[in-house]
Image (cartoon, rainbow, N blue to C red; front, top):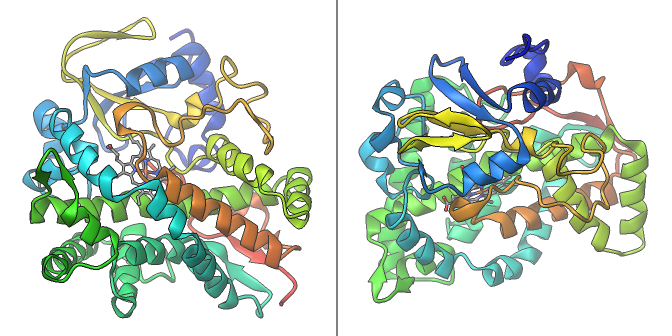
Length: 415
Ligand code: HEM
């Protein structure tokens, strides 16, 4: 490395604004070996071209049990409270051919058509959540809006009865460590929440098998590919991973996205005017730009080299952990014109916010629907929405994979 990074990684300042540190790495050490706060060593990949290559490289495996007994045994990879044996059926932790089979089966149930049909329900949900605070003139948009929205949405889609959805809200709150959402954040508490959620889903799947409905869980049970079906255990694991993968990510899309708009008057006004004219084109490109500019997933999930490979001119040894920094790749000036500028109308925008390759986000259509609906509803109903504190006072959750705010205090004229 030519010199020391003037922007140290994994500090408080880094959590608030990691982009200068990533910019330096991209330029001076694009495939950079570092020790993570957990003590695990990993390569950080920060250039767009290298990131895309790594995400699609079959020599980088997703199965932690096979390739990093050392890192995994410390319990620092994967979902809290999960044991290795339970991870087998999770899309994000398996390689082909198992991944191919499971992904086909889920895709048969979780179709773009099912998501499109869900649009009115997402609008109703967003409105109900805004009704909860619109008369008050102030709110925390994370606890009161961005956090409950994806939980209720995916519960509805899966077929969790409304009367049970608040349990999910509490379990998820524990996982997110959100004050005001019931989270204490203790390791034991998180593990207990994960266990309860999984037990509930297993029981629900059992019931839906006997009495199917029009919901995603019934779809997962019925999905077939060349005569194959998901086992009950696989369907439960799948329902759980949909909830888990679609929750904090969407919280962060709404949180980071709203913040970016509130910090850029010109772009926010541009979007507001376009929505007032009843247009939808700018809203669609705006959500893509917000995913690129300050996306919910800072680093793609873990990958491990199964054989020696070269990445951006650097030798990566078998067994090495590789972390693809989506946030850095999506600000790469080699790929994006004026990458640090928020341009809601950006048209050439092949961002990596949903990943790339065989693990590309299966929930992207739902995430886009939720993101567009949430932003349009907020700007439409609360046109003078403003930050209640200076941006420097906002606190970020910190954590390796995700990038999101702990709270987003706002003010507005009460409805
Ligand atoms: C995979 C981002 C919402 C389900 C991924 C990956 C990314 C991502 C980057 C690939 C990770 C990797 O390769 O390591 C996002 C973002 C979202 C979002 C930014 C919201 C804005 C959702 C939703 C769902 C979901 C709503 C489901 C309800 C999944 C699943 C995978 C995945 C199951 C694993 C796919 C596979 O391994 O084949 N997501 N996601 N995501 N996402 Fe999302």
